Length: 360
Ligand code: IPM
Ligand code: MN
Image (cartoon, rainbow, N blue to C red):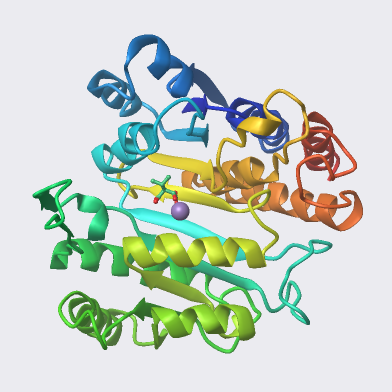
């Protein structure tokens, strides 16, 4: 019996998590696992009412769960940063979800802005470190508001953070790389860095990467990309990639680019993972306030996030079945992934996926 915390959050968040739950119910019935869902109402509305973002007591509560399913955080009446830092980043840091796992997979029938590339070419995974870098808040500001204002926000990494992220990435490459999946000659892990300028931080990453790879994962091919060049290849030759690993800031940026190549925010999912603790799964897109309550938003990203949750919980067959169902729906049903243009409503898309899981 899994205990799942369900945090719909703001805007269209609750609508898409409802569809993910619908599909999870179908998968549970089909594959014989049980779960108990508990809803939490943290988000912009609650903040406006009570001034509370995500209290420490909620973090303690979350520790009793097996996983968290998150919809979206972000409210038009709340200044940028408050909810992001107070809820999303707080959960990531307090629960030490040190990996942000972002698969980049173009499903059949989905439009990509990359000409001449299809599902066979756009099929890789970014392992983004999720606790370090500029996100640590190390830095400060002085003489604020004067012409001499100084602002510093530092990229911070220690060897421990780097090693644990690399270990996850190498293990992931061994288990889910293109060779293991039968679609490539070798399993490959590519480090994305900037060793030509960030000669402290990415030098640390690069040394740790090769040391670990040579010693513990000799069968995994190691590649290195500067982050700027990586952005070019993500557009020009995405088929070169298998598993990529990078720091928090670069990972944030390149996965938005990557998400667009896989069809955009309607489909892109991420997992904030603590392999020894409580992980949190979310669609990468925002709360889309203008579509709230209209039953037009695309729930597939939330459904894919839920599938990733099942995979990490060890329900691999159920996870694969949900992914197959999503592919069936993108290939055969949806006109577009964009809100209001799918040819189906939010709840109908959830029904289609759930039905396919039940029937196949
Ligand atoms: C993401 C988001 C967050 C991040 C923001 C909302 C704090 O952009 O999940 O990628 O920067 O990590
Ligand atoms: Mn981002």
